[in-house]
Image (cartoon, rainbow, N blue to C red; front, side, top):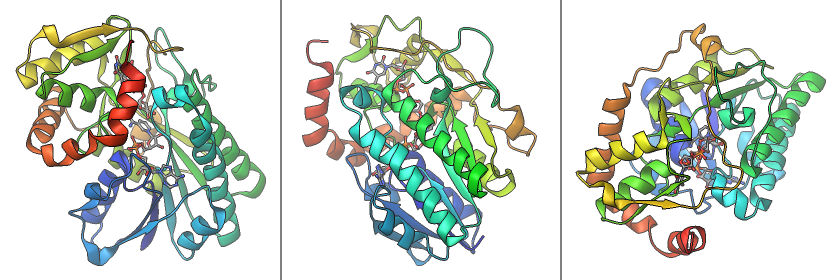
Length: 333
Ligand code: NAD
Ligand code: TDX
C-alpha cells in the first residue's frame, strides 16, 4: 500500500493511527479527511511528517467530497464518527448522518473507484451488554443506545455492500480505548483532567456495576493495521484489550495516579440504557498475528502522565462548546 485515506484522522484513535502508520511504513503516504467537528483537532496531528501527510477538511456525508479524496488510493480506513454515547442520547441526527449515511457513501465511492481495501472501524458496543462470557464475531448485534445502533447500521449496510457488489469491506470492533489525545468527554480523560483540577468525577450508577474492557490506543491501531493488511474482505474482527475493569476500579486508579482522594467522586444519575458489561473474544484477529502489548497499569500510568504533561492540549478544549455540553450533560444530574 502506497497511499491510504484516513477519514476521522483528526480525532483520538484516527490521529494515533496516522502517526503509527507513518512511523511503521516509511514509504506510506496518508491523506487525512476530517470534518473537524468539536472532536476533530489539528493539534492531534501537530507532530506528523508533513512530507507524507495531506489534510483535507470534508464531510463523509458529502459523497462527492469523499469520493474525490479517495481517487487513486490503495485503501481507506474510516474512523469518522459521532463517537460519544451521551451525546447520541441528547440527539442522534449527526450520528445517523455520519455513522450510517457517511459509511454508505464510502462504500459507494469505493465501488465506483474500485478501491482495493475498505477498513471500517467499529465498536464492541454493537453487540450490546453481556453478563458472562464474551461475544465472538458470530454473535448477533444487539445495540442498546443510539450511538451503537448507528454504528451497527453502518456495518450492516457495508456488509450488504460486500455481499451484493463485492466491495472489499473489512470491519473491526474495538473495545474501550484509552491513551493520549482523547477528547475529555469520555470517562477516562474527563476524570483525569477533572481530578488534576480538583473537580468532581461524575460516576454513573455507583460505579460497581458497569464493566469496560480497556484497550491501549497503540494496540488498537496495530489491530486495525493487521486487519487492514491481513484481514479477509467481508469479515469482522474483534479487537479486545483484555483488561476488564469495573468503573469504580478505573476511577480509583485515576485518583491514585493523580494523587487525589475519594472525596472527588460524585455519584450521579445513571445514563439511560446504560450497557452493563462489554466483553469480546479477539481469537480471530490473534490468529492473524496480533496481540495487545500494553499492560494496563503501565498504560494507565503513561496516559495520566501524558495529560499531566500536556495541559496545553486539553485546557483549550475545556472551554466554550465543551463547557456548554458539560453543563447540559451534568447539571442537576
Ligand atoms: P473521536 O470523536 O475522537 O473522533 C472522530 C473524528 O471524526 C473527529 O476528528 C471528527 O472531526 C471526525 N468526524 C466526525 N464526523 C465526521 C464526518 N461526517 N466527516 C468527516 N469526519 C468526521 O472518535 P474516536 O474515539 O477516535 O473514535 C474513532 C472511531 O473508533 C469511531 O468510529 C468510533 O466509533 C470507534 N471506536 C472508538 C472507541 C473508543 O473507545 N474511543 C472504541 C471502539 C471503536
Ligand atoms: O461522566 C461519566 N461517568 C461515568 O460513570 C462518563 C462520560 C462515563 N461514565 C461511565 C459510562 C460507562 O460505563 O464510564 C463508562 C465509559 O463511558 P464512556 O467513556 O462514555 O464510554 P462508553 O460508553 O463505554 O463507549 C466507549 O467505548 C466504545 C466509546 O465512547 C465508544 O466510542 C466506543 O465505541
